[in-house]
Length: 372
Image (cartoon, rainbow, N blue to C red; front, side):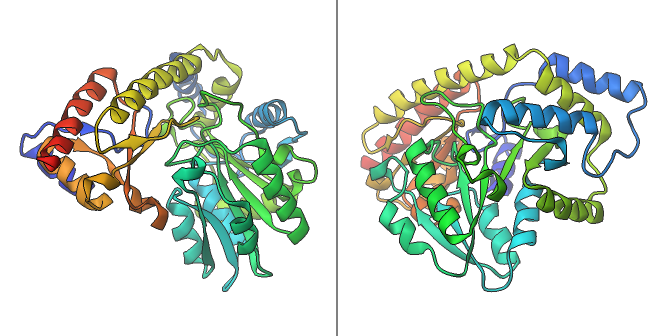
């Protein structure tokens, strides 16, 4: 899809990009200044592999406050992006034939990483009828003696749903009863509009069996800085650290200095970004639901809409290509995120209101042309 989009743009076609899961805002000035000053002050050499002590301490304090658990710096590892935590968790916990329960639809690297280590991916259906939550009896039926890991993504990519405290308690009880680890992807935890973010690690008995994945990319518009982190029990963190030493050696030192400023500095820019995302979400939610043949649930967080296109009669991939080639709007087919994503497209509203208005006009034209 990227190749086709680039080809069309090279041919002079204007494309509105709603496919990219990246904040359109710039990194806040105080964070940029901290990074620049770090370079000027010589923070351009190797850092400790597990991360700068000062940043690990800042992360431990932040997670302790926001997740209501006690976290120490030796339970934190700093990585060049959040994806490393996915990979390290799979590599540490999964063997050939083990099973991992992954949300469907859900962020696709979880599937590819699990399969890379010979594990069996067991899909947990998240369906629109339950606001992209799950059926508890179905979830329970998926647990077997081979289940080693449960993946949670909340707020979710691609649906934007937020798991309730009751849902998290249900999963926690299953995990504790069956001695299963949970990988909790909390990268969008600061981008929440309705409800309150809850971490499964906050539930009694879950901190030791939960790996928290978080980072700076989405909250602070720092995707290019490559700065993420994991929080887990000390034994797992030491295993992760061995993986990091063998792969990346360490995370860039000056980006870690910027990360300290991100966590400890002024948060006004973050609050403004979330306010803008909510305004865009509300606009698109109303407009998309006003197009006959399309419908969408209002997401609780993140910056995506998972749009139901089933009434168009097209598959997800067909509709995405039709929309891109003929109307200049780039989206992602829901089938990219799993079997239960078929019949949907993901729209990212990490774009300006001006471009979102353009996109709505084009999407409406596209659907009307199908009907005619």
